[in-house]
Image (cartoon, rainbow, N blue to C red):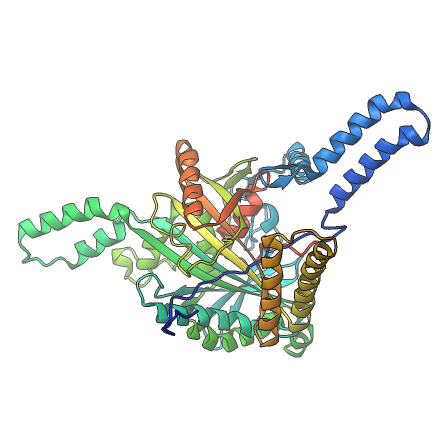
Amino acid sequence: MTTDNDSPSIRTYFGWQQEKVAFLFGLSAQRALMIAASVLFGIWPLAASRMSAAVVCWPVATALGVLAFLRLGGRTVDEWLVAFISYHLVKSRNRHKFASAAFAPSAGTGPKPMDLPGVLAPLKILDAQMPGGGPLAVAYHRLDRTYTAVAKVRFPGIGLVDSQRRDQRVAGWGGLLSGLCTEGNPIVRVQALQRIVPESGAALRRWHADHVSDTAPAAAVEITSGLLATATLATSQRDAYLAFTMDERRAGTAIKGAGGGTAGAAAVLTRHLRALQSSIAGADLQIEAWLGPRDLAEVLRTAFDPHSGRHLAERRANATAPLAVGGGLPAGIDPALAGPAAAEAKPNVYAHDGAQSVTYWVHDWPRNQVYSTVLAPLLGEGQHRRAFSVHIEPLGPREAEREVMRERTARSVAVRMRQRTGQIVPEHEQAALDRAQAQDAERAAGHGLVRFTAYVTLTVTDVEEIEDACAALEADAAAARIEIRRMWYAQDVGFAMSALPLGFGLPKKRW
């Protein structure tokens, strides 16, 4: 965008569209059945010439018709009904609770397999090697047949830089995603996860204790120690991860050429990761390390058990120290210990290892033009742990063309039908048509199209603080101009998709 005097202005972003169900006139299959049943109950007394049955049938027809279009908390009645029934069916078989092998030890003497709850049960962490020789953890999902590698990244941020440099960094991220929007690309999903952990100040106090000079004035040491004991409560530790997921079916030929099996899949995945490193660097993202099996297990473990974070950080810091000063233990943990010791999925929260988490789904993104720093309130400093995860699915050119043309055709038909019947075209329909036309022009110019969604998880260790923390999170989301919805009856699934960098969390498109 430019101003009247042709001087560059701050770039804004808009135009994202919410995915719609297109089973029948925008209705889901359940809602279509409810409407069909409503019509059937309404006409049956007339067709059968039994008006006495209308006393029962017509109220039922009215109730079904209203429930088909009624929304509660942003969800339709059939969605609430499916979630409620699914949860209680699982609860009736006592499968909403999880106890790890620590409470049910196996009789075998070999290495223990991974023991993860719920939707994470099909996962297995494979040990691979990066081309440089470093270890690489590959999370294999045997049901989805996907392989995921995770990188821990550092980023300079965009809040304190000038607008030109900010736009360059955002454009670099867009270039990374656009490079994945190629036909038949085996990288089918990208997850960007940022975890915000309130910092207790222990690491900073330890650094001060190790580096304080013996000749330092006692008053200076006392004042600095007092400041470190009180001022660090407002700081937060931030961990950022990028997860790239490869589909085994798309890369089948390449996997066979690399030897087949999980070893061949890991080799093909590392080949694509090496090709992506220049694009990642172009987005001003610095890869600290590709996570190995023990590193990825540590990330999972600290998400399930926040109390273990300090202990594992101490172990990592002392990993290279001599045994005499407490070193010797390798960094990270065994993948068999990555899961929680115990967990329970409740309708409104997910309890795990002395902590409770609440996951929200981003239901609606800003409807007006916003700056690239719009999510700053949600990702700012806080008193509780937060995890914000964005899942992105790049679309190939042919699929992108079908999606754009389907949206443009639907919007154009809606506007023309109103014009032919002499109705006034609402501004939101005209704006939607303009967005579809602009999106088609951008696609023709070579831009990529992606599906995406986002989740945010709040974790507390004190049960009494959870509602206040949720209220603060919802206020921050409102300040960020996004609308979030609590994932009732699916908190365990939401936690797995939001707080863990495992590359799955974007559902398949419903037709």
